Amino acid sequence: MRIANLAGRLVLLDGNGGCVDVEELSQGRFPSDPQEVYTHWESFHAWAASASLDGAQGFDPGALDAVVPRPPQIFAVGLNYRGHAEEAGLKPPPATVVFNKYVSDLTGPVTNIGLSPANVDWEVEMVAVVGIGGRHISEADGWAHIAGLTLGQDISDRVTQFAAPPTQFGLAKSYPGYSPIGPFLVTIDELQEAGLNLDDLELGCEVNGRIRQKAQTKDLIFSVPALVARISEVVTLIAGDLIFTGTPSGVGMGMTPPQYLKAGDELISWCEGIGEMRHHFIND
Image (cartoon, rainbow, N blue to C red; front, side, top):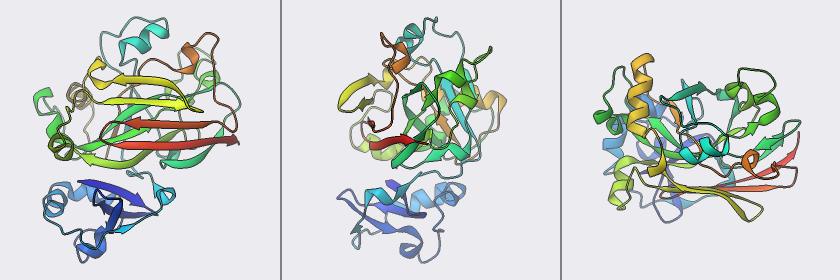
């Protein structure tokens, strides 16, 4: 199953470029609000498995918004690929580095993003969406608590990040639009039925046609189930939460000389089995 937020309404995708409105198809059983579906995730997932998509119609990708528009909590993981830690001149962390992001910086998969004053960097990430919340979730049960995966960018203002010690991870990555996600949420069973390995998906991004990041999620230091287990040791996970799982090497800060986004640049991000996002940068 693939779902999306089309102009503020929850839709199911048919796999052929079409979609159907969930509230209309379910005759009101499930709401139009894309966020509310996560509070009914198990029953919605069961219903959608047998729902007929015969009336699917084409849609404008430019009308897609953040597939999870108002997550209760947003967790992000730093230095979760060895290559990224190395390019930052740091050792791989012995434990998960978790920080928070904010709902106000979420945006959709095809938008313009205003640049903050200086040194704005890209960071492509696979994003896990919590479907069943809880605390003290075991790593063995981690995937069972994930509704699906989507794609994200953890766009970062490096000046704000390193303005003063300690590093300001959350604040630097929270300007308006700096957390685009999409284009769809793809459920775990959908990815498995497509023959994809949940722990080994390709993801990457390019700037103005030049590939900057390309990696496999098998290179994550802490896997999605490990992140679910670690975070839920401390925090009660809530259905609809987002977990940004970390970025691989290839960020602009790590280049010689460093390169950053500027007005007029196009950033294309992709993840195997999920799709791609396109963002243009403008002066804010």
